Picture 1 (cartoon, rainbow, N blue to C red):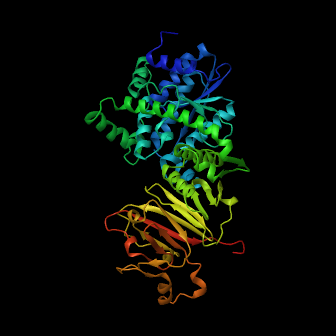
Picture 2 (picture 1 turned 180 degrees about the vertical axis):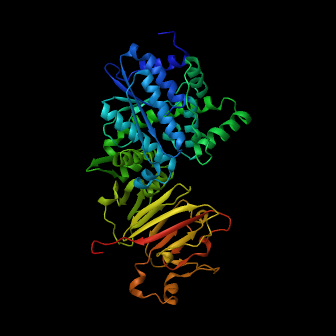
Picture 3 (picture 1 turned 90 degrees about the horizontal axis):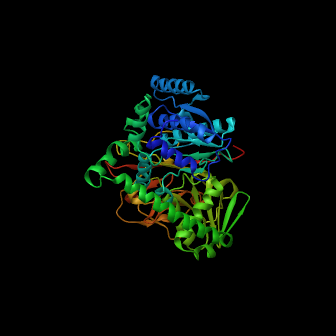
Length: 491
């Protein structure tokens, strides 16, 4: 083999670091046809005889760029054939996958679909690792995206070189190997040119609809030009610092975990008093760990979810619940906080029971929660659609609300003594009881009417009226909310 280039030295160093079992190992290489994955494949192919591993190429056609995507698949197949490597190529529909899994973000659905495909190839081929061509540029973009979304330390650490398979299936999965996090995209293109290797250009990398593309093509160049020419290196340092801090916090949490948590039957239960006795940072990480234990991973749990979980933990006595992503529920009942699948927890009609809802703050977030006999869905819509009239059979149980007035969270509950309400069009509040009386609402129905309540008061009497202060503002995004009865077993 010729003297390795700088890129091959980086890949060699990653192969030599502890954790990757190389003897008699097969590695699946995820190949898109672009310069990064092509450079990865060629470098691993040139190094394989020195490390005694076999390679298998895998390519997923996402089927949303038409003929261009078909040409990418043909290019990868031709490249693998030329290198004498076996290759798995498949075509899947990310929109269908998105609908099937109930994922609001197209980017997230496409990513999950791709990882699921790679895991299935690794499983069928008996491979112990999947190698991906993520670079230092990808790492910087990932950290910056997480920073913009308000992620905690878990988001700021970015991508790791070698980790356990990040998605819930299969279990156990292959290792995820990213040996090029120390090289830039310019280096991968230069390496391909050095070998005389062509590659494909993905037009999807320039589509303005994708947030990552906006960061790559607009925000990152502005930061480098106007603020810090070495912004990528700065973000890499932030990532490394976050990794070290997380390592320490998680080791501390492991020491305290047996004293504050109990795992059983797919659930995690906390002694509230013991958990509150920990440092606030450990409380946050304990709740994240509980969610990841029940859900399989924590990828859809945001910092806003954790904030509301912490409020639930530290709140007053009584019974409260929070619906979390992927059908997980946190329930506090006096001295115990339980995190488990929602199907394991009965919803009480006790008026002390509060159904806490974490409200969407971005268009790609969708709230979908079971609240007793109701299913509540909510989504933020842009100003261009905010004034469109609701349609469908459940119009009276659909409301347009002001997301800024509601805040980050709300509660769905029934009426309580002393409740007051400011009906739309009125400047003052009045007793909810008087509102029901004037509206000729039968007494036997009043206790079953859902109320959406936030810090400011009752925002919406479902099926009846919106509070004046909760009405959407012209020209601003609105929060669309809908309640629908959950069919009973008897229909």
